[in-house]
Amino acid sequence: MIVDLILTILFYALAFVLNNTIGTLSDASLPSEAVNAIMNMRGTLNAIDVVLPVLTIFAVLSAVLVREALLLGYKVAMWIIRRIPTQS
Image 1: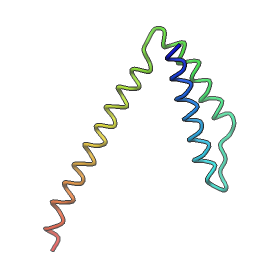
Image 2 (image 1 turned 30 degrees about the horizontal axis):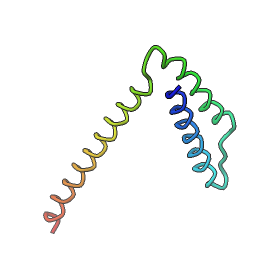
Image 3 (image 1 turned 180 degrees about the vertical axis):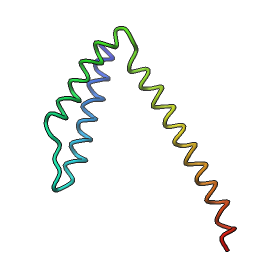
C-alpha cells in the first residue's frame, strides 16, 4: 500500500514534469500515449514489487548515480582549477 502510494506520486510527478517541459516548447507536444505509458508502468511495478523490491533498487541506483555525477563534477572542477594558472 505504501509502495503503491509512493509509485503513484513518483509517476504523477514524472508525467507532470514531462508535460510542463514539453509544454514550454511552442512547436512540440507530448502525445497522450506517452503519459498513459508512464501511468501504466506504475501498475506493472506494483505487480513486480511483490516479488522484487523495485522501488528500493531504483532508490539505491539513483543514489549511486548521483554520487558518481557529483564525483565527476568535482574532478572536472579540480582539473579546471589546476589548469587555469598554466594557461598564461
